[in-house]
Length: 185
Image (cartoon, rainbow, N blue to C red; front, side, top):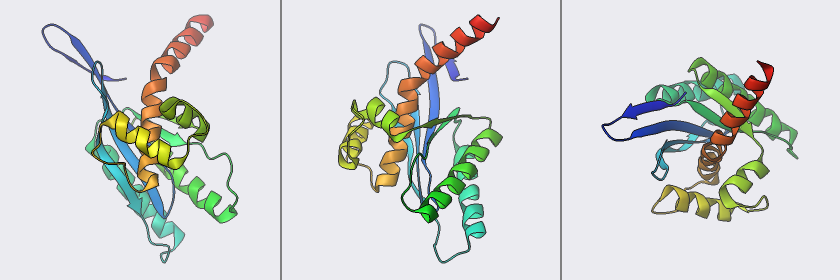
């Protein structure tokens, strides 16, 4: 559900979505506030970092703690996480998968919907085509969120793009879910 604030003349639907670009060394995050009739805006944007010198379980615990704090700070209703489809490096794939798992569990514990998007889905929703490069995505995120400069590093921009993708796709997902529920009734 979304938060609904009613004023005398209009009903404004307000939603907070967190995008997560999972990683153990660098985990990008962006909390985007979306309101009906207004441009989306980033209320938190950055990268959570853990030291490669620490043991993996300590790094995962640190990441979990930071994600829990982020989710406690904002009334987030949905988490958009990058679906890891392919990694050349097995070690990278493992750490991305572990970070992704921690993020999704924390979202569920915070009562958030969790949705995974492939890189192509994100690029199509945000840039309009699935072959957009990192710089083009950064520029689109800057434009869509009205930021003074492109978000750095790329992990933060990717997280913002994930949140924006979810905001773009949420109405279609809701309509599809209603159609499925109606068909099953």
